[in-house]
Length: 166
Length: 266
Image (cartoon, rainbow over all chains, first blue to last red; front, side, top):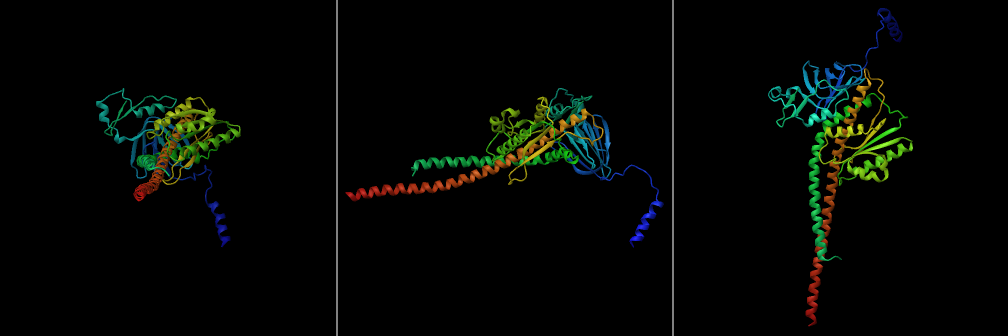
């Protein structure tokens, strides 16, 4: 019985073409995605298909089995494509993203809001450039030493809608 | 044997103290529930920030000489062993590191720690933070602390944060350590600028996480401390009431004896 199995194994390489490719990725094909701000958790070890992030060195998309990297975020929109194909967008002010070797991704944003809760109508009617709020202080206190091209002021209205000004 | 008046005064003061400790316990319970609710997202955030150090298996290099210890506590007392346990651990760490010939500097978050460490380890203190513990900590507070630390010019190679980690409302808080080390060889496409920004951000995240855990532990410890104080006060009140009644009866009996023996002498 053992001899037969050995024979089979010996025979197999001759039939199969041996090609030299890079080593196959053996790590998880699922991405364990954690997306949080200091006050709210959006995703916790969730399994998603792709995440698009705006970083200081450019925007890029992260798929499972991405090469490990550490990046710093710039103000912009993060898009998360979940397993069922739907996408959700979030505006982030700053933060960091870590992709580990085991395909886990931690996106830690200093301020992050779902794009739906930003009210464009308020932006058009009310252009108050001098408005400073606690959110702005945290964005500017945490400004990376390389300066961004533009800065955003976000203010927190008591009615729980956000107003953003360019 | 104290007079009736002394016992009355004592009884009144113990009853007042019991009222105060009961109300402090309720305030602490309310603050604790709020802090615990805020701790849930902060925990995900903080463990996300720390997971890099676990996953990449980054080891602190042995030959680095400049250390930093951040002790996180608060300004207010009456919360059990919170401040003393952090201070004790900090003293042990300082002794261990100076014994190994390393240079150590300390950041105190919370006035109580300053009081505990000032006399013996005053020359190790780099920064003191006051007004901690009155309001719930925010990310802004953590970034202020980190900015001060980075602007202070102390180029540390390795650091640890000593805080009380919150486990359960009836358990004593544990001391947690976080290490923050240097080499990141396995990660791709990183230049020095990005790495520095990333590490500064991670520092703030770690401080924020430890602040959140620390306030939750403090409020729950204050709750249990005030609860046991109220229980002790009510025990004292029971004992004092019994003594009061006995003394009162003794005084009445004495008066009666005097009257009767006076009447009998006539």
